[in-house]
Length: 475
Image (cartoon, rainbow, N blue to C red):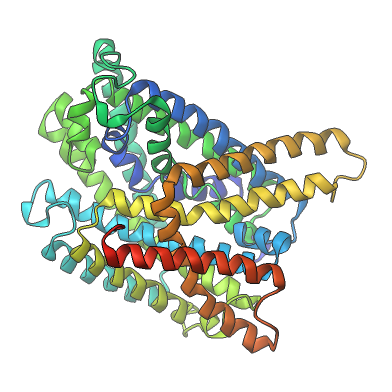
């Protein structure tokens, strides 16, 4: 643990939350949303997301304050409330979501370059995957040397993220046209959209992906100078990012029509700004995104390794994952993470997976950790633990956590059966590492309840495997 003088203050924690959430998603938001919904459904969807994610932010705030002894956020809450396998599953799902997001970042980075160099295409051509692989292992060996907290990299990537976005919002606000925004507000001219409910449901996993990282402060809670700052940073960071996301999305819908936005190549924000000001707009966004993604790849590589390292330390993961090199980098955790990224980069080549497919899969994997965190908050407030003599506050927190839990369940429904089954296929192999950890401790693998839960996961994984084999499902 760092000394008190080295611990993270509120501003640093807010930066962690904002930096975690603003990766590549916001730069592709105009196309991602326009391909699934029209203005009316987008407004409703953001309304649901704002309430749901805000309650989730309040859940992390409440748990940070009421359970200060639980470090590492989403994983610790699931384990404390629902046992070892649920804790392991949350850590496993969070880890997969994090490195799957990195796969998506690689695809988006080379898709961005494909805007200027057609050989990279949509980021999943053989040349793009080959270059992405070289970059992956360059980052890997950079991290192995112990480059963990390079301040200049953080400053550059922060500027690269925020400045182009603020410039876009100002320029787009001036160029905004109300007649384009309201032309077909409910998407009635586009039969493939279906009804409003279907449009809202279709866009929900995109909104989840752009908010992955909302738990960033709680993951680093052990390093916070004051525990109360963890929750404050989560809420403040969320509100700031929400404002940026909504403005970017809605202003774009007043610049170009829905069909035009839906047909843009990602990063679609570059195409929107080019439509307003010409080629220099696309170049500005593309450069900002490229630098931002390079910084994000480094920081998320470290975060992926830290998740495995932290869970190995308390024996939820096997002990080999806590091995460090001379530079105090968790080498085995880093190798496992980057081997999985490499494998999925190759899969994107053969399955022709796009950035959108990858972010949907990453989003579906994060849903279980979010769900168990909300459920743990319900459990605490429901039975009154830590609420002695604070009935009013307990009722308020119970209501907030119930809304957050309902939102998490809605997201599972919104994701659809395909991504639920694919998630099960990725969750099931984790039992190997869980079994190794239990064997090291000389403890039985499952409780009776956990046996039933794993049986459901295995059944879902089997259906997904058969679906992929038969062609009913695809990546």
